[in-house]
Image 1 (cartoon, rainbow, N blue to C red):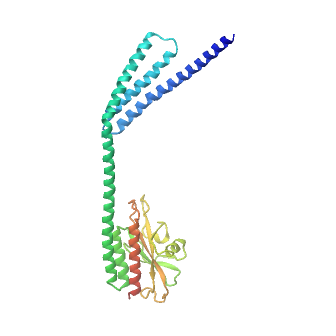
Image 2: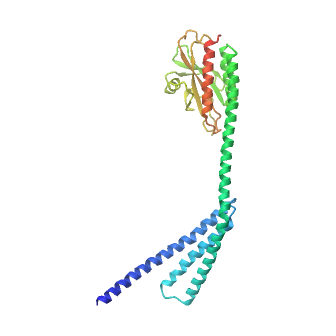
Length: 307
């Protein structure tokens, strides 16, 4: 009786193992058949891939592997000799295709490594080209700014200084608009006195106690300000244009005899610079540094100029 119980227990264990093997073979076959579809889709979408035939060969190998697992489902129960013959032919074919695929990979791996090496070289060359282009751009911009500084220093007329600064900065940096906001007579607001393209008539004013104004006044660095800032609305953004990036920098003004002679204490003007809208351009670090240099030179020229 005990021997019969043991036999029955082993039989149940075998049936459970066979059941798990059956389910595993089914899902293995399903995965094997899905992978070639993905490879074929990749080969169709990748027009520049040079080894499509290798993908097809690899797909055939995977399909045959899946077929062996699928046919194996019929061997867990009583089956005919035909099933054995089909299984044998499938396995032999799988062996041939798998060996051929392995030999093919041995030959193309060096080529694939060469493609990767060439890709790395191209990436390095492209990065070098961008760096050289940036260096040339910085050098060109620096040369224009040096010429601008020379022009600023060559005149004492404040209106000429401001107008020259706007025009030359607009040309050098490719600006859509550039403007100066000067302190008002009372010192409680900033007035738009000079613009590059005259999109907004001079005389517009903004309160000097606005948070964004205090933010610009609190640092000697050129900073990016929202295009919705009151003093950044020097050019209306129309249509579906992407809002432009706007930079602002304070310009120290020691005295203003040409504008308001009674303001002898140190105060600040604001220079606002707007990139073209819908151009996807961003302010670069060296451009902001050049703006700061120009602002300092304008401040010196304004303090030394006359009416």
